[in-house]
Image (tube, rainbow, N blue to C red; front, top):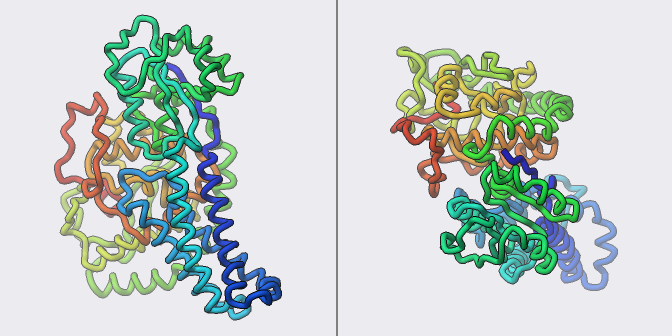
Length: 495
């Protein structure tokens, strides 16, 4: 199998344009607001309140980042990209006003706050339109060729590019292996030549990337010819790496044990464990202190509204496949599992009325911070499942037990990217996101996931069938396995 890694950094000119543009918009909007309010005397005000303006800029940027202003739009996003800047900027303005007026020593004039908020709102909205206009004109795009040895593989790769609205590639055409017939490629891309012409085309057409849609065996044959291109700065991307880059997941149908071994060598898991542990203890400790009043109130309401214990204890599978006891606030009736472990239904009658709201706002998961303190869980990692369901899923989903190579997490990449799994296919999709996290573990990724988790809690997650479109390409090994009709693999007390 061919194992090709992307260039190593996902930071691009697109991110730089948007983020630096937002910094400039926020700072210049505040400066303009001051001078519009005070005229030429605004310089003294700026100097006297410099800390206030810096704090406001930081709040805005944090809200922008947490709200996904720099994320590529996906099919699962319900808010249209045209409205996202307006909504997020309004939230940022509101939080800025609350924070600044809560601290008198950092108070910003109401007129300045109002004017700067309107300027930021208008300019951030227009900057996104400018960005999309530049993208449509070919800015920020890398010139690329598709190297193919089979029409079906080429079609899959092109479909992946078309589904990504923020693909960084401008595909000029295709290069075919010698035995391929151009007539078999009914695509809109022109055939520019054969493999022997590849080096010449790259040099004359100023290509920066080659995207591979070739078989593993063909990839092994072509590596000696493709490898020298990497030394000249040409990016080589196979289908797995391209999916990782654009969709932020790992396609299970295209990987093997060899790929997983190479990915493990590329992972920073050993270096990050100590950092993760320190962050886990610090944040979990603060979370327990701040969440103590909520726990007391929720515990009292649980005791008053339904018989049974306040804390629900359940066996989950942890690091290395070892079981441990997970703590949650009880959200189901005491006899919910009198007939044994059952996967939770979409409309589960076992959930109490209070439990519905505890789940909706994720308050039932606060006791899991004790699991984090004990070292049984991390703040970020694959979501732990029950042994009964883990054994079932491992039978049908290849590499499912790979998720047990790292500590399970209170939140994770799969949880913020995909809703509760409502079928075997959906559980497979979540594993693809878990594998992406395992391969790309880093301190920055953990911080990103934690920030986006706050957004997820505020917005809430729906069941997967309520979102737009599953991945239609269900893996071949799953085609003969009928998915459970009304089953949900979720994080409730019975899953």
